[in-house]
Length: 230
Length: 239
Image (cartoon, rainbow over all chains, first blue to last red; front, side):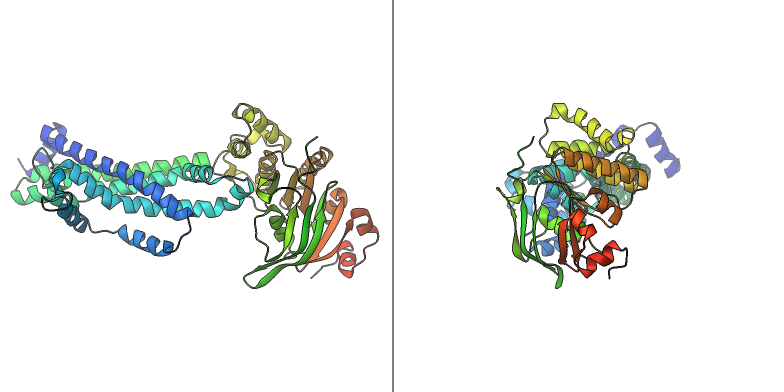
């Protein structure tokens, strides 16, 4: 059977190995986005609203970190988690957890930087009205995060898109171990050279479908925000 | 009646505001006390908006001082409608509800109060419309409803009818009159000399950041003392 036909066969028969790989990819990247959001949104809000010396410098660094090379992050996490590294005793190297850590580090700056921009812009708009309404700091932050929720969801989707498509970091810290740390991207990267083209092509098609779904979702969020928030 | 004595008068003493090397307000001394609306008039750039914002405590004065009798400015029951109000990214009703929450109105009465306030400014039929989709005039009326949510003792209005048609202007002026009758002190700016005649208890004429003339509206219109006031009343351009 030609490779692309085999790839469709894998997809249409819901091949268990392929499904396991897709599932692990989604678990790793969604977990990473969840943790990155828990770090990134509050950090972005703080950076948007609190004035301190070195703030602008930090914003520049943060924006630069949106483009962190995944392999460098992978290397850093590898060194930290390797047996002789500072966190080596945790025994996390070559586990899904290690991949989640690496992708969290990769995605958190993206979510933080986009949240910072979103919340700062909204604050510039709202400042006078909220000040005049005597809104205290806690309610202020809650208001800004809530009213910016559609843009923040878009930031999360951008982070997820980055995580699910990257290979450099998780291949180093995960090791592409079959049915344990093998994800879509690591499988494509390594199985292609080993000749398992049907699997690689099938996973590639799944990845593209996910990319399209993310963008469709982002589009839907934008439409919803126009409908509800004007 | 509400406890007004703690909130008025507002006293400006030699207030000067500089922004980026430009003098916005210069040596303003002024007392705002109870009664009919105090109306600020003067050409663009005269300092009307700056005076309102300073009275709200939204801008810091460069020198001089503003005194609110009693406590600090932040604890006052006062509200402002900006000339170009910002709509929160919520529905019209959501904007009012938010202001009620910010003013610590109990949750149970917020729905009723929201409906009342929207009806007061004639927006009850647009309650579910996203606020940013409203027209300029509707947004201004929504901002007025929002400002009234805190049940203010003093209400500052910056050109409240600038983008309204005559019917809507009339509606707003009715609201202002009924607020005044209820003991709310309105301090407003306007370009509209007719509106100043209709509403003002006293007039403050500003020109180039300075207070040119102030007095009871009847005197101001009958016997203007300054050249600027005479020109303004005659409808000439004050440059």
